[in-house]
Amino acid sequence: MQTDSTIFEFIQKGASDGMWYWDMEHPENEWMNPQFWQTLGYDPKEKRHSISEWQALIFPEDLKRAEEQLNEHLQTPDTPYDQVLRYRHADGHTVWVRCRGMAIRDENNRPTRMLGVHHDITQQMQALEDLSSLSQRFEVAVDSAQIGVWDLNIKTQELHWDERMFQLYKVDPETFTNGYESWSKTVYPADLEKADKAVKESIINGKKYNREFRIIWPNGEIRHLHAYGKIIHNAQGEPERMIGVNFDVTREKRLQEKINKLVITDYLTGIGNRRHFMKEAGRDIARAQRYSIPLSLFIMDIDDFKKINDTYGHDVGDLVIKRVATLCAGFLRETDLFCRYGGEEFAGVLTQSSLETAEEVCEKLRHAVAASHVITRDNQKIEFTVSIGVSQLEMHRDVLGDLIRRADQALYIAKNSGKNQVIAEH
Image (cartoon, rainbow, N blue to C red; front, side, top):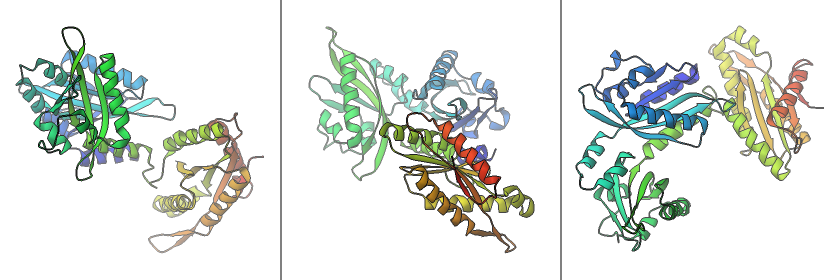
């Protein structure tokens, strides 16, 4: 698939860490980039792209924990797949790896593939092991891919940072007042309330603190941090201190955002794909029904597209598809949704639009397409048209499938009664 090829190309070029790609429909097949194996001391050419290859190197107890968290992530999308694992290096020593992954799901929310990143944190873990007297800090470090260490006195609110924490936050130790309030001032305002609330809940409930939030560097740059923390109780069982770690996940966050975008973007046109349409259209319908706002849906099909491909070749067919996508996406409002539905079909949702209004909009789209053309490499002018079927949301009754079905029926009538026309449901 070209979509998979695009993802592979992106991963190959953008990753300095080890990365993996798992085809869950063929469970034994798992692609790993060269860095994955080089981190473990192996020649990538000597390793097969299969699950059994890496499972033979991971510590058995870590493999069991990884499988448990994987199952949780697959069953509950909101549960992150993020953990620290140990592998045996080719020369025998232990390699500590922070593994983060994300399931890619089909239209039915069924996981079909997974993408992930392996980040070597062996040096950090070795540095922590040198702090043998600080056993409680080491316990936190084992549970996380730590970078900076912090220690909060719960009663006095006095906060101590190690040198790495100051580097993370780009804060001058001379200006840091060692108070909880000093940390609060560095947190991105929109994230502060939830981050602060999580700290307080952790103190009250005695549970571990586990949170991602953004901070603002003095130069205005926004960074993403992940924080882990643990409550330390005194002899009377009262919460006395909270110790933990912060590490920067900005690079991983941005990489994940790029991967997320690839997953929902049509590789040819750059607009949303069918997966994106199904997800966003469902949200638009739920919002319209909640607030009793009119909404219409349309399906568009390029007329005689097979003939265009057969006569001029698939390259010209691609030009036509891209031209239609650019015209329509540029014509519609930002609040509207327009995606490539598959092949030569497109689908759109017009928010706050009655059936009559939607017909008018679709007529304008049809006219704009009919007035356009593409030029082939040998300077031939190719004109083309589209047929469109439109349906309107019936409040408190319809689901997405109902609108698609009725719009598709209207499109069928348009295609079989002359083409190059807009037909609304009756």
